[in-house]
Image 1: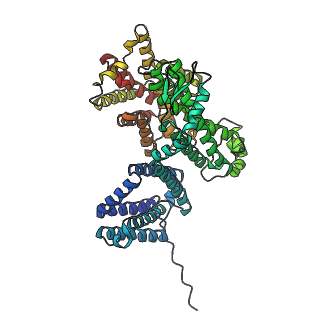
Image 2: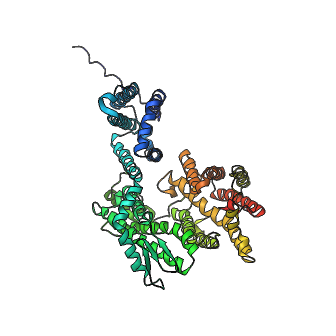
Image 3: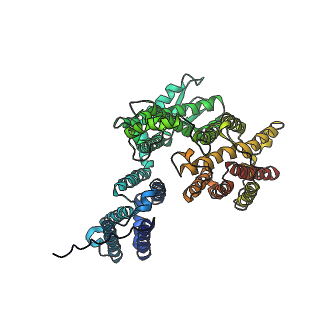
Length: 564
């Protein structure tokens, strides 16, 4: 009897991250080959997509998927680090990429269109590209069960962006059915407060002899309905573990009904502002801000009420401030809650910086007061002091959460602030000071003395104290730590990762609107000040220094538009 043969030794596992990086490299190479070899057919497909949906919107899908992927890798770093190659997935990816190349070759050579027609060819190539895309995603993720998460998100965002290309048509259709009812409701709400007879000289013109408005289809509330639907959809998806289904889907008709009624209230308030306060404020300020105010109030209010009602949400010990990991069910979290509570019943937990509330509340108050003050101003922002007072009051109430420590003022932070100011001015648009009318409208001299001096003191205090503190708490104290861990109090302030560094700086830039390029560079610089000593106060010092120099420049030269 021959001796038993030894079983072949298992191949040693690859070093950490090698398999993931290898699979990612394969996908990148496939994409490069497709683009390099078949740019003409891809350009044709791009034109078809542009014609039917609007190509630029797909950039948002791509950015959203990249952000989702990076966040997923962060949460499942151990799985990605230790994952291995899968031969079936490699075969699937290779076959689908070869099929895609063949389809593009047939499209370039004109072999497919005679058989299938133009749109048949388009649909075939897009279907094969989708199969390849799913295979490429399977190459990235360590478990196939994670693929539906990404595909579902992509489908949701794609559906929203496709629908957004037809907003004008949907708006007109919605207004044709609801326009008369909206104007009738506005008339009912307006009559007790107008102080004069309500007149409707035309079907969609309403007001009094003192002030009246024309309600166009864009003001009919359809866009608000779209925004509230997106907000509630994203909220229910993100917090699906704590909600009861299918009853939570009732939040959609509830939110839509409330936002439609809120739109009628907004139009009524607009007319009343024009009658009782100032027509210019109604047109230039309230009209542009009231929609966002109603959207935020209705959206956040609906979410808050839903979380308080057991009909919609699962109010178990899991919602007592304990975060649930992705994939954790409410029942599992409820079981884990007593153990977590036992830990916290003893010594207080160690934290590594301000809490989420302490980081976000000043910035949220700053944003809310900014929207409200802009709604009741036209031209010069004479209500700016209210922002300073409100944020200062919040910071003072939360002062026990901020412990700057005994270390001296950061010279590096001051230096970064000076360099940031110089870069900011070097990149300033050349036509910024040529709009004489806009510069004059922002000149505080129009207030007369001593009010101009008092306003300038508040403006400087806000620009160099309250705004830097509020923004740095949000964009350097909260967001980078949140991008590292769901519980920010477990992450020391100043912890560096490339994702948190770049994403938080870009978010800071996007917040500044048209100045997003300069602001993104400034965000990168303030983050470097934070990382120097891992002290949030250093980022605040850098930000305050930049703003102090910019404020001095504005006052010295009269370049009031640089204040925004």
